[in-house]
Length: 380
Image 1 (spheres, rainbow, N blue to C red):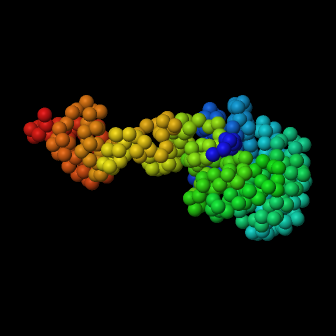
Image 2 (cartoon, helix red, strand yellow):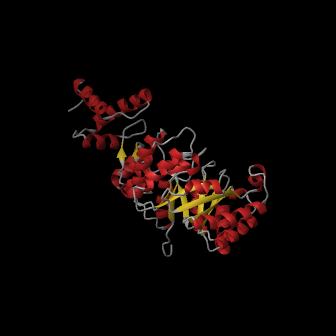
Image 3 (cartoon, one colour):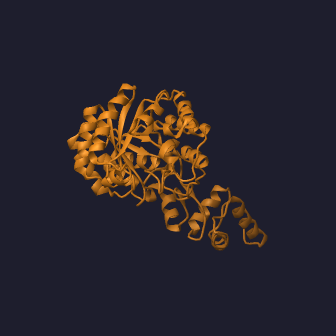
Protein backbone atom coordinates (compact mmCIF):
# COMPACT_ATOMS: atom_id res chain seq x y z
CA UNK A 1 0.00 0.00 0.00
CA UNK A 2 2.98 2.29 0.52
CA UNK A 3 3.38 5.29 2.79
CA UNK A 4 0.12 6.74 4.07
CA UNK A 5 -0.84 10.08 2.56
CA UNK A 6 -3.05 12.71 4.16
CA UNK A 7 -6.19 13.89 2.39
CA UNK A 8 -7.69 17.07 3.84
CA UNK A 9 -11.47 17.08 4.24
CA UNK A 10 -13.12 20.38 3.34
CA UNK A 11 -16.68 19.71 4.42
CA UNK A 12 -19.37 21.77 2.74
CA UNK A 13 -22.47 20.57 4.62
CA UNK A 14 -23.13 24.14 5.74
CA UNK A 15 -22.88 25.53 2.20
CA UNK A 16 -23.60 23.03 -0.57
CA UNK A 17 -25.45 20.74 1.82
CA UNK A 18 -27.84 23.53 2.68
CA UNK A 19 -28.35 24.21 -1.03
CA UNK A 20 -30.43 21.02 -1.18
CA UNK A 21 -33.91 22.03 -2.30
CA UNK A 22 -36.03 22.70 0.78
CA UNK A 23 -33.18 22.56 3.32
CA UNK A 24 -32.66 25.58 5.58
CA UNK A 25 -30.51 25.47 8.71
CA UNK A 26 -31.04 27.93 11.54
CA UNK A 27 -28.05 29.83 12.94
CA UNK A 28 -28.09 27.61 16.03
CA UNK A 29 -28.19 24.45 13.89
CA UNK A 30 -25.28 25.65 11.79
CA UNK A 31 -23.20 26.39 14.88
CA UNK A 32 -24.13 23.00 16.33
CA UNK A 33 -23.13 21.17 13.14
CA UNK A 34 -19.87 23.14 12.94
CA UNK A 35 -19.00 22.25 16.55
CA UNK A 36 -19.65 18.57 15.94
CA UNK A 37 -17.68 18.49 12.69
CA UNK A 38 -14.75 20.16 14.41
CA UNK A 39 -15.00 17.76 17.36
CA UNK A 40 -14.85 14.87 14.87
CA UNK A 41 -11.56 16.21 13.54
CA UNK A 42 -12.77 17.68 10.24
CA UNK A 43 -10.11 20.36 9.56
CA UNK A 44 -11.91 22.65 7.09
CA UNK A 45 -15.51 23.84 6.78
CA UNK A 46 -17.15 25.80 3.99
CA UNK A 47 -19.71 27.68 6.03
CA UNK A 48 -21.80 29.88 3.76
CA UNK A 49 -22.30 32.43 0.99
CA UNK A 50 -21.80 36.02 2.18
CA UNK A 51 -23.53 37.51 -0.86
CA UNK A 52 -26.84 36.04 0.36
CA UNK A 53 -27.17 39.02 2.70
CA UNK A 54 -26.86 40.28 6.25
CA UNK A 55 -28.54 37.31 7.93
CA UNK A 56 -26.19 34.85 6.24
CA UNK A 57 -23.22 37.05 7.10
CA UNK A 58 -24.26 37.11 10.74
CA UNK A 59 -24.53 33.32 10.76
CA UNK A 60 -21.06 33.03 9.25
CA UNK A 61 -19.74 35.42 11.89
CA UNK A 62 -21.39 33.38 14.65
CA UNK A 63 -19.52 30.27 13.46
CA UNK A 64 -16.14 31.96 13.18
CA UNK A 65 -16.63 33.49 16.65
CA UNK A 66 -16.75 29.96 18.10
CA UNK A 67 -12.96 29.86 17.56
CA UNK A 68 -13.04 26.22 16.55
CA UNK A 69 -9.83 24.47 15.55
CA UNK A 70 -10.71 24.57 11.85
CA UNK A 71 -10.07 26.59 8.70
CA UNK A 72 -13.26 28.39 7.70
CA UNK A 73 -14.12 29.05 4.05
CA UNK A 74 -16.87 31.00 2.31
CA UNK A 75 -18.07 30.67 -1.26
CA UNK A 76 -18.10 33.72 -3.53
CA UNK A 77 -18.45 34.48 -7.18
CA UNK A 78 -15.31 35.95 -8.68
CA UNK A 79 -16.43 39.55 -8.46
CA UNK A 80 -15.77 42.58 -6.26
CA UNK A 81 -19.24 42.69 -4.70
CA UNK A 82 -18.94 39.14 -3.33
CA UNK A 83 -15.41 39.82 -2.09
CA UNK A 84 -16.62 42.89 -0.23
CA UNK A 85 -19.46 40.87 1.35
CA UNK A 86 -16.93 38.37 2.71
CA UNK A 87 -14.82 40.95 4.53
CA UNK A 88 -15.01 41.26 8.29
CA UNK A 89 -16.60 37.85 8.89
CA UNK A 90 -13.55 36.23 10.43
CA UNK A 91 -13.02 33.56 7.77
CA UNK A 92 -9.53 32.51 6.71
CA UNK A 93 -10.13 31.39 3.13
CA UNK A 94 -12.33 32.56 0.30
CA UNK A 95 -13.49 30.40 -2.57
CA UNK A 96 -13.58 32.65 -5.62
CA UNK A 97 -15.60 30.67 -8.13
CA UNK A 98 -15.97 31.14 -11.86
CA UNK A 99 -17.16 28.83 -14.68
CA UNK A 100 -14.65 26.72 -16.57
CA UNK A 101 -16.79 25.16 -19.30
CA UNK A 102 -17.61 26.90 -22.57
CA UNK A 103 -21.24 26.03 -21.87
CA UNK A 104 -21.32 28.16 -18.72
CA UNK A 105 -18.85 30.81 -19.87
CA UNK A 106 -20.96 31.54 -22.96
CA UNK A 107 -24.47 30.83 -21.73
CA UNK A 108 -24.23 31.81 -18.05
CA UNK A 109 -21.61 34.56 -17.96
CA UNK A 110 -22.18 35.49 -21.63
CA UNK A 111 -18.44 36.11 -21.90
CA UNK A 112 -15.39 34.28 -23.29
CA UNK A 113 -12.36 32.42 -21.95
CA UNK A 114 -10.19 35.54 -21.97
CA UNK A 115 -12.63 37.19 -19.57
CA UNK A 116 -12.27 34.27 -17.15
CA UNK A 117 -8.48 34.47 -17.18
CA UNK A 118 -8.57 38.26 -16.77
CA UNK A 119 -10.94 38.02 -13.80
CA UNK A 120 -8.74 35.46 -12.07
CA UNK A 121 -5.63 37.59 -12.55
CA UNK A 122 -7.50 40.63 -11.18
CA UNK A 123 -9.56 39.18 -8.32
CA UNK A 124 -7.11 36.76 -6.69
CA UNK A 125 -4.63 39.53 -5.73
CA UNK A 126 -7.54 41.65 -4.44
CA UNK A 127 -8.63 38.81 -2.16
CA UNK A 128 -5.06 38.34 -0.93
CA UNK A 129 -4.80 42.06 -0.20
CA UNK A 130 -8.02 41.73 1.83
CA UNK A 131 -6.28 39.17 4.03
CA UNK A 132 -7.79 35.95 2.66
CA UNK A 133 -6.17 32.73 1.58
CA UNK A 134 -7.55 32.00 -1.87
CA UNK A 135 -9.20 28.87 -3.16
CA UNK A 136 -9.90 29.30 -6.87
CA UNK A 137 -13.15 27.51 -7.62
CA UNK A 138 -13.53 26.03 -11.08
CA UNK A 139 -17.27 25.67 -11.56
CA UNK A 140 -18.27 23.01 -14.11
CA UNK A 141 -14.65 21.92 -14.55
CA UNK A 142 -15.73 18.44 -15.59
CA UNK A 143 -17.28 19.79 -18.82
CA UNK A 144 -14.38 22.14 -19.55
CA UNK A 145 -11.56 21.75 -22.03
CA UNK A 146 -8.71 20.33 -19.95
CA UNK A 147 -6.09 22.48 -21.68
CA UNK A 148 -8.09 25.55 -20.68
CA UNK A 149 -8.29 24.30 -17.09
CA UNK A 150 -4.48 23.96 -17.10
CA UNK A 151 -4.22 27.55 -18.33
CA UNK A 152 -6.49 28.61 -15.48
CA UNK A 153 -4.25 26.85 -12.97
CA UNK A 154 -1.20 28.68 -14.34
CA UNK A 155 -2.91 32.06 -14.08
CA UNK A 156 -4.34 31.30 -10.64
CA UNK A 157 -0.98 30.18 -9.27
CA UNK A 158 0.81 33.20 -10.73
CA UNK A 159 -1.82 35.45 -9.13
CA UNK A 160 -1.19 33.89 -5.71
CA UNK A 161 -3.99 31.34 -5.28
CA UNK A 162 -3.27 28.52 -2.86
CA UNK A 163 -5.72 25.93 -4.17
CA UNK A 164 -7.84 25.00 -7.18
CA UNK A 165 -11.21 23.33 -6.77
CA UNK A 166 -12.14 21.03 -9.64
CA UNK A 167 -15.93 20.92 -9.53
CA UNK A 168 -17.97 18.19 -11.15
CA UNK A 169 -20.91 20.56 -10.92
CA UNK A 170 -23.40 18.45 -12.86
CA UNK A 171 -22.12 15.07 -11.65
CA UNK A 172 -21.06 13.52 -14.97
CA UNK A 173 -17.64 12.08 -14.13
CA UNK A 174 -16.65 8.45 -13.63
CA UNK A 175 -13.72 7.24 -11.52
CA UNK A 176 -11.28 6.14 -14.23
CA UNK A 177 -11.52 9.43 -16.10
CA UNK A 178 -11.37 11.38 -12.83
CA UNK A 179 -8.12 9.72 -11.78
CA UNK A 180 -6.57 10.53 -15.17
CA UNK A 181 -7.69 14.17 -14.97
CA UNK A 182 -6.12 14.62 -11.56
CA UNK A 183 -2.90 12.94 -12.63
CA UNK A 184 -2.70 15.51 -15.42
CA UNK A 185 -3.46 18.41 -13.09
CA UNK A 186 -0.91 17.16 -10.54
CA UNK A 187 1.80 16.84 -13.18
CA UNK A 188 1.24 20.38 -14.39
CA UNK A 189 0.62 22.41 -11.24
CA UNK A 190 1.99 22.92 -7.75
CA UNK A 191 -1.34 24.20 -6.41
CA UNK A 192 -3.32 22.29 -3.82
CA UNK A 193 -6.01 20.40 -5.73
CA UNK A 194 -9.52 19.90 -4.37
CA UNK A 195 -12.23 17.62 -5.71
CA UNK A 196 -15.88 18.69 -5.53
CA UNK A 197 -18.12 15.81 -6.66
CA UNK A 198 -21.87 15.56 -7.18
CA UNK A 199 -23.75 12.27 -7.00
CA UNK A 200 -26.04 12.40 -10.03
CA UNK A 201 -24.85 8.96 -11.18
CA UNK A 202 -24.16 7.70 -7.66
CA UNK A 203 -20.41 8.09 -8.18
CA UNK A 204 -19.50 11.10 -6.03
CA UNK A 205 -17.59 9.12 -3.39
CA UNK A 206 -15.94 6.93 -6.02
CA UNK A 207 -14.89 9.99 -8.02
CA UNK A 208 -13.51 11.64 -4.89
CA UNK A 209 -11.45 8.55 -4.11
CA UNK A 210 -10.21 8.49 -7.70
CA UNK A 211 -9.23 12.15 -7.44
CA UNK A 212 -7.28 11.40 -4.25
CA UNK A 213 -5.48 8.55 -5.99
CA UNK A 214 -4.73 10.87 -8.91
CA UNK A 215 -3.15 13.55 -6.73
CA UNK A 216 -5.88 15.61 -5.08
CA UNK A 217 -4.85 17.07 -1.74
CA UNK A 218 -8.36 18.06 -0.59
CA UNK A 219 -11.86 16.63 -0.98
CA UNK A 220 -15.25 18.28 -0.47
CA UNK A 221 -17.79 16.22 1.47
CA UNK A 222 -21.16 16.62 3.16
CA UNK A 223 -22.67 14.70 6.06
CA UNK A 224 -25.10 12.07 4.72
CA UNK A 225 -24.14 13.13 1.18
CA UNK A 226 -26.49 16.12 1.46
CA UNK A 227 -26.37 18.61 -1.42
CA UNK A 228 -27.97 19.91 -4.57
CA UNK A 229 -29.94 17.42 -6.68
CA UNK A 230 -28.55 13.96 -5.81
CA UNK A 231 -26.10 15.44 -3.30
CA UNK A 232 -22.35 15.48 -2.81
CA UNK A 233 -19.70 12.99 -1.78
CA UNK A 234 -20.62 11.65 1.65
CA UNK A 235 -18.25 12.53 4.51
CA UNK A 236 -18.72 9.16 6.17
CA UNK A 237 -18.34 7.17 2.95
CA UNK A 238 -15.22 8.98 1.81
CA UNK A 239 -13.40 8.94 5.15
CA UNK A 240 -14.16 5.27 5.87
CA UNK A 241 -13.30 4.00 2.39
CA UNK A 242 -10.23 6.23 2.03
CA UNK A 243 -8.86 4.80 5.27
CA UNK A 244 -9.91 1.17 4.88
CA UNK A 245 -9.35 0.68 1.17
CA UNK A 246 -6.38 2.95 0.46
CA UNK A 247 -4.79 3.80 3.79
CA UNK A 248 -5.29 7.55 3.45
CA UNK A 249 -5.15 9.61 6.64
CA UNK A 250 -7.87 12.20 7.24
CA UNK A 251 -7.70 12.70 11.00
CA UNK A 252 -11.49 12.30 11.21
CA UNK A 253 -12.96 10.19 14.03
CA UNK A 254 -15.33 7.69 12.42
CA UNK A 255 -16.93 6.88 15.77
CA UNK A 256 -18.67 10.27 15.61
CA UNK A 257 -20.39 9.62 12.28
CA UNK A 258 -23.60 8.20 13.70
CA UNK A 259 -24.27 11.21 15.95
CA UNK A 260 -23.27 13.62 13.18
CA UNK A 261 -25.58 11.87 10.75
CA UNK A 262 -28.52 12.08 13.12
CA UNK A 263 -27.81 15.75 13.88
CA UNK A 264 -27.75 16.73 10.19
CA UNK A 265 -30.73 14.53 9.36
CA UNK A 266 -32.80 16.31 12.01
CA UNK A 267 -31.62 19.81 11.08
CA UNK A 268 -32.16 19.21 7.36
CA UNK A 269 -35.46 17.39 7.66
CA UNK A 270 -33.96 14.61 5.51
CA UNK A 271 -34.20 11.25 7.31
CA UNK A 272 -31.35 8.83 6.70
CA UNK A 273 -32.47 5.73 4.75
CA UNK A 274 -32.28 2.57 6.85
CA UNK A 275 -29.72 1.05 4.49
CA UNK A 276 -27.61 4.20 3.94
CA UNK A 277 -24.02 2.97 3.97
CA UNK A 278 -22.22 3.23 7.31
CA UNK A 279 -24.80 5.36 9.14
CA UNK A 280 -28.13 3.75 8.26
CA UNK A 281 -29.94 2.07 11.14
CA UNK A 282 -29.90 -1.35 9.45
CA UNK A 283 -26.47 -1.56 7.84
CA UNK A 284 -25.08 -3.80 10.59
CA UNK A 285 -28.34 -5.65 11.13
CA UNK A 286 -28.62 -9.28 10.00
CA UNK A 287 -31.63 -11.50 9.43
CA UNK A 288 -30.67 -14.11 6.84
CA UNK A 289 -30.25 -17.54 8.38
CA UNK A 290 -27.01 -18.36 6.59
CA UNK A 291 -25.45 -15.00 7.50
CA UNK A 292 -26.54 -15.16 11.12
CA UNK A 293 -25.15 -18.67 11.49
CA UNK A 294 -21.82 -17.45 10.09
CA UNK A 295 -21.76 -14.35 12.28
CA UNK A 296 -22.49 -16.29 15.45
CA UNK A 297 -19.57 -18.58 14.64
CA UNK A 298 -17.21 -15.70 13.77
CA UNK A 299 -18.22 -12.10 12.86
CA UNK A 300 -15.48 -11.96 10.23
CA UNK A 301 -17.40 -14.48 8.16
CA UNK A 302 -19.74 -11.68 6.99
CA UNK A 303 -17.87 -8.52 7.94
CA UNK A 304 -16.15 -6.34 5.37
CA UNK A 305 -16.00 -3.40 7.77
CA UNK A 306 -15.78 -3.77 11.53
CA UNK A 307 -18.72 -1.79 12.98
CA UNK A 308 -16.60 -1.05 16.07
CA UNK A 309 -14.58 1.30 13.85
CA UNK A 310 -17.74 3.41 13.70
CA UNK A 311 -18.66 2.90 17.34
CA UNK A 312 -21.40 0.47 16.33
CA UNK A 313 -21.99 -3.29 16.57
CA UNK A 314 -23.70 -6.12 14.75
CA UNK A 315 -27.37 -6.63 15.55
CA UNK A 316 -29.23 -9.85 14.88
CA UNK A 317 -32.97 -9.65 14.21
CA UNK A 318 -35.54 -12.28 13.37
CA UNK A 319 -37.54 -12.23 10.17
CA UNK A 320 -38.72 -14.23 7.19
CA UNK A 321 -35.19 -15.37 6.28
CA UNK A 322 -34.09 -16.39 9.77
CA UNK A 323 -33.24 -19.94 10.79
CA UNK A 324 -33.51 -21.85 14.04
CA UNK A 325 -29.95 -20.96 15.09
CA UNK A 326 -30.86 -17.27 14.99
CA UNK A 327 -34.01 -17.90 17.02
CA UNK A 328 -32.04 -19.81 19.66
CA UNK A 329 -29.40 -17.07 19.79
CA UNK A 330 -31.86 -14.14 20.06
CA UNK A 331 -33.95 -15.82 22.76
CA UNK A 332 -30.84 -16.75 24.70
CA UNK A 333 -30.00 -13.03 24.82
CA UNK A 334 -33.50 -12.49 26.22
CA UNK A 335 -32.68 -14.97 28.99
CA UNK A 336 -34.80 -17.79 27.54
CA UNK A 337 -33.45 -21.18 26.55
CA UNK A 338 -35.47 -22.88 23.83
CA UNK A 339 -35.49 -26.40 22.53
CA UNK A 340 -35.07 -26.88 18.79
CA UNK A 341 -38.77 -27.79 18.56
CA UNK A 342 -39.75 -24.57 20.32
CA UNK A 343 -37.44 -22.58 18.05
CA UNK A 344 -39.16 -24.07 15.01
CA UNK A 345 -42.60 -23.16 16.38
CA UNK A 346 -41.49 -19.59 17.05
CA UNK A 347 -39.81 -19.32 13.64
CA UNK A 348 -43.17 -20.07 11.99
CA UNK A 349 -44.73 -17.21 13.97
CA UNK A 350 -41.83 -14.87 13.15
CA UNK A 351 -42.17 -15.49 9.43
CA UNK A 352 -45.92 -14.96 9.50
CA UNK A 353 -45.47 -11.76 11.54
CA UNK A 354 -42.88 -10.35 9.11
CA UNK A 355 -45.16 -10.92 6.10
CA UNK A 356 -48.14 -9.26 7.78
CA UNK A 357 -46.47 -6.29 9.53
CA UNK A 358 -43.51 -5.69 7.15
CA UNK A 359 -41.01 -5.43 9.99
CA UNK A 360 -38.99 -7.56 12.35
CA UNK A 361 -40.65 -8.48 15.64
CA UNK A 362 -39.34 -6.48 18.57
CA UNK A 363 -38.55 -7.76 22.07
CA UNK A 364 -42.15 -7.42 23.24
CA UNK A 365 -43.37 -9.38 20.21
CA UNK A 366 -40.82 -12.14 20.82
CA UNK A 367 -41.80 -12.47 24.46
CA UNK A 368 -45.44 -12.64 23.40
CA UNK A 369 -44.63 -15.50 21.02
CA UNK A 370 -43.01 -17.37 23.90
CA UNK A 371 -45.99 -16.76 26.21
CA UNK A 372 -48.32 -18.04 23.51
CA UNK A 373 -46.29 -21.23 23.25
CA UNK A 374 -46.43 -21.66 27.01
CA UNK A 375 -50.20 -21.12 27.11
CA UNK A 376 -50.59 -23.72 24.38
CA UNK A 377 -48.45 -26.13 26.36
CA UNK A 378 -45.66 -26.12 23.77
CA UNK A 379 -43.00 -24.33 25.80
CA UNK A 380 -40.97 -25.69 28.70
